[in-house]
Length: 583
Image: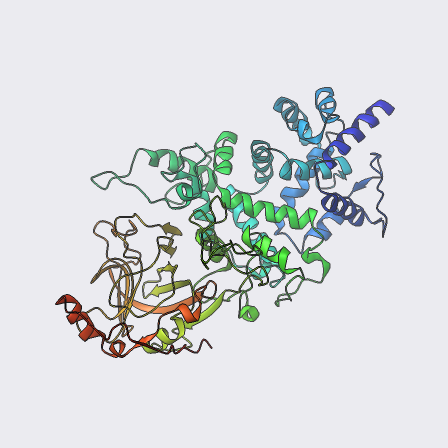
C-alpha cells in the first residue's frame, strides 16, 4: 500500500510542477476551502492521498452553483469523480510522471480509456479526491491540445449535446470576461448566434485541417458552386451539425453520435472556443480573482481590481473585455449586440498593443510584425495609458435620426464599429479602421471589414480588388450623401442614406471590396436602429489632422472642379482646426 501511495503522490507532484506558483497555490487552497479545511495563511499543503482527503458532491455543488449553469456543473463534477476512481495511475503513467508532468500526457491513451470504464461505479454521491481534482485541471489546461480536446470531449458528453455545452460555457465565461462588471451567468442571455458560429467555425474553406493562420480561419466565406448549389462539403457539414445538435435539418431529434475524432478536429480548429474555455478554467480553478469572492447579484459589480499592465496584457489576449462605458445598464450595454457578439467581434478587430513603448523614429503609427493579436499590424499606444473603453458615440434611439448629429459624433474619433438593424430583424455592420471625415471619395484601411450578427455571425474581409473601404459625405449635390462601405458609388456593400430612411447592401453576386453577400434581408432595406461604437480614440495627432479650408463649405463645387481637372489654388489654404465635441 505504501508503494502505491508513493506512486500516487509522485503523479500529483509531477502535475503540480506544470502550474505556476500562483496557480498551484490557488488550486490547492481552493480544494481545501471546498473540503471545509482551508489552510489560512499556510503555504504548505499535504499531498498524500487518504480517504478523508476528498470533496463530497454537496460541497462541490454548493461552491460552483453561483458560477456555472447546472448541466455544466455536472459535467465538471462527474469528470473529476471519474478521475478520482482511477486512484493509482498505471505503472507506465507513474514512471513517466516521475520525469515531469509533461510526460504524463504522453502515456498511452488506452490506459486512460481503460481507467474511465470504471465510471459505471460513479453516482451523484461519489467523492472527488485530490488526485481527481488536480489531474482533471492539469489535463484541461497544461497538456497538449489533443489531450485537452480528448478530455473536453468526455466533459461535454454529460450535457444533452455539444450545442448545449457550448451555450453553457459561453454564458459561464462572460462574467469573467467582463472582469466582474456583470456578476452572474444568469445575467447573460443564451446566445444561439455565437453557438452556431462556433459549431460551424471549422467548416469554412480556410479550415482544411492544416493549421491555418488567423486570417484564413476567421475571414471565410460560405461557398457554392457555379450554379448556386451546395458543395460536396455540405453532407459532412450536415452530419457534423446533426451529431453536435442532436437534431436533424428539420429539427427532429437525432440519434447520430458525435465521434471523438470529429470533436477533436473541431476543437483544434476553433481557436475562439479554446480561448473561451481557457478563460473559464483559469478563473474557476487557477486564479484568486473569482466571482465567488462575493455574493452573486443580478446587478453589475465593480470591475476586478488589477494593475494597468495586467489589464492591458489580458485585454490584448482577449482574456478580459475592455471597459465598456455605460455598462451600468448591463447586460444590455448595447441594444443591438450581446456580450457574446462583442466577444466574437473582438477577435476580428486589429488589437492595439498596450503597455509597449512606441518604436524609435518619427512615425507615430507603426505596425508590429509577428503579433498574433493583430495579423495586419497594430496601433502603438503609450504604455502609460490603460486599455481604452468601448464607448457609444451614436445611437439613433437616443441621439435621433439626424445625419448632422451622426457626423458630429463620429468624425475624428478613431476606429469605430457601425451596427445597423433593418426592419426585418437582421443585424449587420462594419468596422471602419480609420477616422471618419467628410470626403467626396472612398478612403480607409484594409483592416476594415463587414459583418453580420443576425441571423448568422459572419466576418467578411477585404478581397483586395479595390480600396473602397469607407465613405462619408453630406451636402454634396452631385455625389451620394450618406455613410457607406465597399463596392462603388451608388452600389455599396453597405450604405445608409443621409435621411436615415433607406439603406442598401448590394451584392450581385458579391460585394467587390469584401466579397460579401447582401447583409440585409432585402438589398434595399429600411433602417430600424443604428449604433456607432468607438473602439479606441484616434491615434492621429490633432495638430497633424485635417484643417478647414474655405472650399470645404462647398464640396459639390469642389467635386465638379475635380471632374473638370481644374486646378484649385485655394484648396491647400487651411484654417485652424475646429474639433467636434465628443460628448
